[in-house]
Amino acid sequence: MQANKSSKRSISLIGMAGAGKSTISNELAKIIDYEIIDSDFFIEKEYGQSLQNILDNKGYLKLREIEEDILLKINFNKIILSTGGSAIYSSKAMNYLMDNSTVFFLDVPFDQIIERVKNFSARGFAKSPNQTIKDAFEERKCLYEKYSHHLINNSSDVDSCLKKILELI
Image (cartoon, rainbow, N blue to C red; front, top):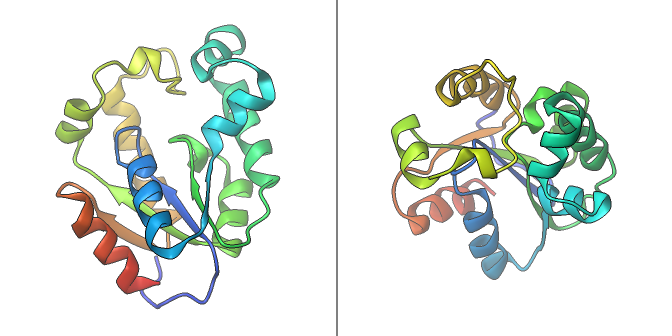
């Protein structure tokens, strides 16, 4: 991770389901007036079905492939990108995000993720069938760290998280 201020004109938010990516992107957009892009929404729009349907019908590896394809199509120009939690499984997509935006990992402890997300089975959560949510959390954490410019703790209130991001941009 880099600790320097960035001159990039777009922001990408990465982290687990429940890390607050959508909430933070919405609030941040009100302050800096960037367009919000939610990659999960784009997937659902392009495929005409929910992430969970894609996951159920095509499997988690296909969902990750679709996610990579969507991310590589994004035109970064004053946007705030809220990614799906499994975006970090594509080094190609993540390198593209890092080259074209300042990437913030919204870090939240596992117990808070579980409190925030009541039902992972309806979220389109792309994990291998034999993997627990805790296993996926632990596996992903080092990837989130690897593919971010800045780690932001988002276990407190929204305003604290926004303040930290604004200080870095």
